Amino acid sequence: MPRILITGGAGFIGSHLCDRFIAEGDEVICLDNFLTGSPDNIAHLLGNPKFRFVQYNVTDFIYVEGKVDAVLHLASPASPIDYLKLPIQTLKVGSLGTHKTLGLAKAKGARYLLASTSETYGDPLVHPQREDYWGNVNPIGVRGVYDEAKRFSEAMTMAYHRYHNLDTRIVRIFNTFGPRMRLDDGRVLPAFMEQALTGKDLTAFGDGTQTRSFCYVDDLVEGIVRLLRSDFNEPVNIGNPDEITILQFAKEIIELTGSKSKIAFKPLPQDDPKVRQPDISRAREVLKWEPKVPRLEGLKRTIGYFKGKLGIK
Ligand code: UDP
Image 1 (cartoon, rainbow, N blue to C red):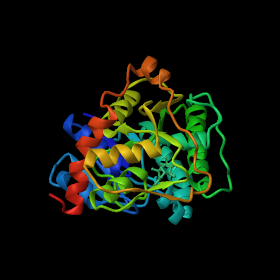
Image 2: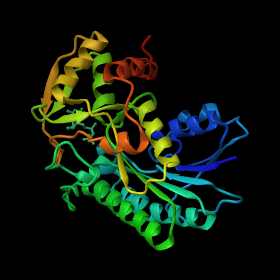
Image 3: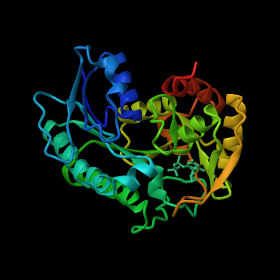
């Protein structure tokens, strides 16, 4: 029976992965230091004998007793606001944390999956982004702490694969949404939801013409599980190619929530990517995967969660 270790398992995506493996009857060891994760995300799993939680900072040496079949490294601050607030921790978990988790996988003979990101493409000059595009990243910009840590973590993962023959996977995760996103993580979706549901102006940064492509979390989890079970070692984009401008997105959320909120324009943060859309040809071909949940359907499933967090009926 597989025994799976997930770092960042109390985070938004990590906790959905814990749920998925537990539902399949696997054993899950979840490590998280709650820097940006939350006990609420895993509270429902705590009584389960197949689930073990250890509060831990994965930049330190990781000791686990017994066998481990797979290590999934999800731990990292992942929203621009979080990694601006936590620049050193972001760099450490992407570099030292990746090294420690790779070392653990090697010691246990486990398969390894790195959660990488569309941010490895930076402010992309190729659109949509294919995995063979090397990116356009400002190493010393404010987003560099995340982008470069993730680029380093990909390099380290490939080095363990090539030099130690470690069985590795790299998923490049594009904008993902769903229940358990933190209301205050500063990302556009929780920000707009909170603003629309409480009657505040929706804060569109810049002129709102920048684009993003949003994937519902269940689709992402399915893609990650398929990648883990494949034999493919090169990076794979997982995301929803349905692209939308931030301004259209604000209007969509206002309409969907039936809100009377208006849109207010705020300055564009430094190095904010102008466009982002995954080319998912590789995922389609190698994993036979593509997203199933349209954005509107995903948003409807997510509104209830945010209402609950805001105490709105
Ligand atoms: N954004 C916005 N209003 C907000 C928060 C974000 O207009 O209140 C914009 C942000 O400038 C970016 C896009 O929405 O262009 C997505 O931002 P997010 O922080 O969700 O993540 P990113 O995709 O930039 O990593």
